[in-house]
Length: 368
Image 1 (cartoon, rainbow, N blue to C red):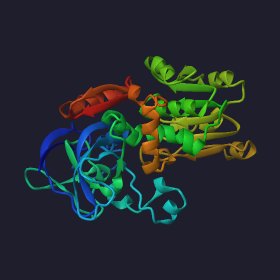
Image 2: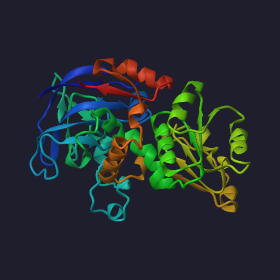
Image 3: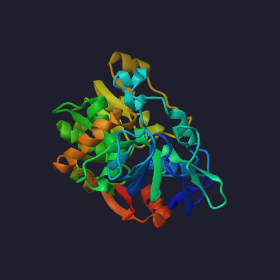
Image 4: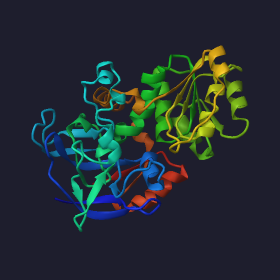
């Protein structure tokens, strides 16, 4: 079938919206008509070359839509189902899955990084017949996508598609880091570096957990009102005196928990200094490939501080997507307010520029 999709053909170049040929789903695959897709920094890392992804590729790993057709052997989905897409599918059978670490499953990692389906081939071709890759085996900056059955999570039909799309990445990554990885406790103090979609999702998770102090740090003062609307009790403009200000707010001890949702090593190197003795620092944002930073191991040992990472909110997506959707429908997670603007697929380059400016929450491609 003919579809329209956002194709990146050259690192650093503009994204082109092209008509492509999409093959029907094969065994254990489904055809999804996209209704909404989020615009995430991880997509833009492919544009800049930081991700090192092979090109050409259709971008997009954060989306939701309706199943239109199922391939042979599909047993968990049917045409008409509403689904959110997961960019880390899991097998359910490996050691990690059997021990509750489905977000760390490596069964399909080769295909995900190579931009193919699980059989090593693609379903997309351009007008010349050349193969086009699928980002994260999803390629959901497109009107339609063929995706693995394992990448689809059924969601309640009443959940808005724009909300479901960002539950598929930003919300799960941030809320899950607070609830699943750090396990923020009631009455605690929390610092969040970065007030983008993921950082604000951490704020939502921390508030849901009952944190007493939620301190958001960002380079843009324009994020203050937005951060406070999600539950931030304090807003600190990032500058040289940031650590002193955080300590002043936390009675000189440092925070119980700190989250880095930007992907900058200069921030990650400060995380251990931001937490109190016995505190937990969680890295969420991905720095450019190969970047490193130093920490003082004596401080970690002496004060029993924890420095850890969280990928995809340490989530079991088939459980957590539905859980977060229900919390949203019940008014306990204001995910809809993360969405600060929408665009058409044809406006993708302008929307990416707006995202890089950093003054918005989440921008959504609305296919309606």
